[in-house]
Amino acid sequence: METVIYLLIFQGFLGGYDVLWNHEWKEKLPTKPSAALEQKIHGVRELFYAVVFLGLAWLSWHGIWAWIFFGLIVIEVVLTAWDFVTEDKTRTLSPTERVTHLVLSMTGGAYVALLIPVLIEWSRLPSFLVDADYGVRSWALTVLGVGVFVWGVRDLWSGLALSNAARRISKPA
Image (cartoon, rainbow, N blue to C red; front, side, top):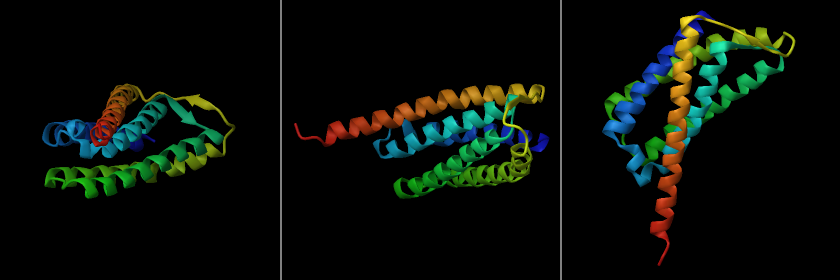
């Protein structure tokens, strides 16, 4: 589980870089009407990541909870695939963003691959959410989880606002 935690911390910091540098600074996605769907996908996916970061920072998911957690990860993977397709339809990614997304995908695949045997083991236990504590790593995941939650709400709000603005513009007076 230790390697999963380190990979998630790396994922959190690299994802933060991607959002701040590529999405905010270079592309200014929250201001582009063409990015409305992408912003909504980002927002929902970030909320799922908040659950992953916070959920693994302090809990072991035993029994049915392991399957619920696995389901959250599957939904996050589907959202990521949808995001890739949406990005390719609406804009050209810079080489920096493309490489960042590649590394994020590789890290994400690694943490999921290493977490699956843990989830299988947990699924065989009685159904409880059990306290876990990884010391400073739990606190790092907590900070990342709170940050990604706040940013997820912000991106979701941005995507909804961009969609509403586009609807108002397209309606005849």
